[in-house]
Image 1 (cartoon, rainbow, N blue to C red):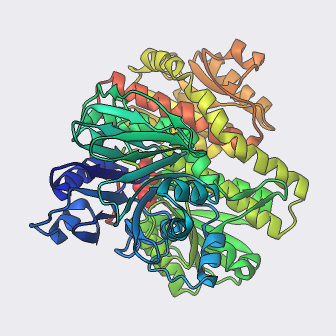
Image 2 (tube, rainbow, N blue to C red):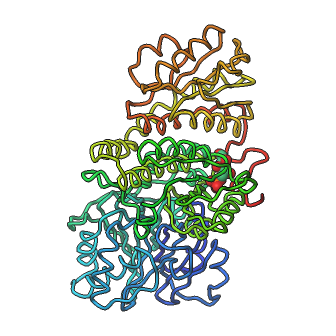
Image 3 (cartoon, rainbow, N blue to C red):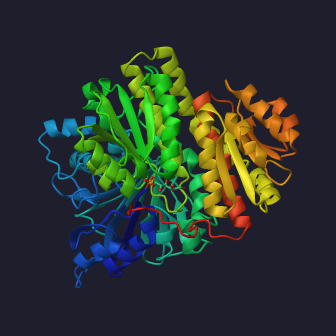
Length: 606
Ligand code: F6R
């Protein structure tokens, strides 16, 4: 998720571009850049205010392109910030999305003598377009041949120095719209920035590209057939657009689950071979092969993702895994062990307790790896090797989409480590296919969000709530309870379902509901017994179960259904209804679910 904005008209472009970029900052904010053919290129690390400091006051350009970045390839540096130029600097380009085959393309270009200033896939795209432009009779033709060579997703805007008032845009799996004004046009990755210029908008479909000049716009398909579409009027205000029409970032981010589950696995699953292709680990294959024991360190939700990962990695890769809370790890005696490795999990990449654990592990000579969302963050830099989650920025304080992507990346890691060891191709393919199905299954669950809302209304006034699950859903029970606590301030506890009889069942009465995660899996019957014990004490039960299971329908008071999936993937899917439930309960109680009291998004103090 990054932000694109481009403008062509008769007004001074730089103030308009800066204004548009500022409105897009919620999409990414680690670096930003602007190019206008008349004034040149400007790039800065950090939010748009940093870029603003570099911009000339007497800029004259009346057209330009701009970008605010959320790093995916390469750290957030000025070199990696967009716009990027081609080899001869005849054109500049800004891009959202991921060019999956950028390494192959870059190798060919390097062989042809190209030199690159950044580590980004976008610069490769710019160079390729520059090459094609050299032989094509028009930019349309060059774009067509370039984009046919690209695998992956893109939303982009391009400007040529030689034709400063014409800007091109293209979309494939990453949104792009054009704004149609009076003698001015613009391009934006969403309507927030376009709204600064005009309310008239046209969204590009995948596989379309557009050419804008101050007076005209033209939309074509990649095989250059002209399509005609009249602009629609933007009805929302800027804040609603940022939230994509949702009332809160939390709901928007929960609803992004299909996209996030797609992005975190994009280009990483080799389905027919039953392998995971994790770029950040490729160079360290030997060290990873030698791991005899893994210690996962993380805090909060990321810790629960680690607990889930323990079950997966032990089952699929046969590596013993210990999961430690970041704030505890440092204070324990560590028995030196050959073949031990540390895996830190962190959305922000800045959590102080997790960071301190990494430093401690490194001091003891242990290989430290990371699963991090924020590219170039401190934890990403401190770990020796790692995997990025590609979940996009998470604005809601309570982690939702980032947690799902952590679970998915752990599944990819289990596949990777498993295939280095004893995991059979058949089981690996089964796991790979199940991972690939997650986005569609997540969309199916989300389509029934209104049902969760009804249940939330029913339970919103309870004082306490218990969440139970076993095996792969053990961690989910804790995460579900944490989500409810954070946004509704209801006292909620997570428990292993089998632990009920060892104490917590004492609390059960008609006013103390339990949410039981009970999909069709190896521990289904056991969890059913636990639910029966609760029902015998008149405790209300909300179950999360596999669609079509009649037994649970009879037993539970309310059921939230998830599609059939293999055990570890059902555990990922089960998270989504719990996130929705927490959200709707928090909203029904009138709380600001995006900014729960006493909490910060990134905990940089110990
Ligand atoms: C819960 C939540 C926190 C974080 C924890 C670790 O919804 O967001 O528990 O998971 O503070 O943060 P990161 O993943 O940034 O290290």
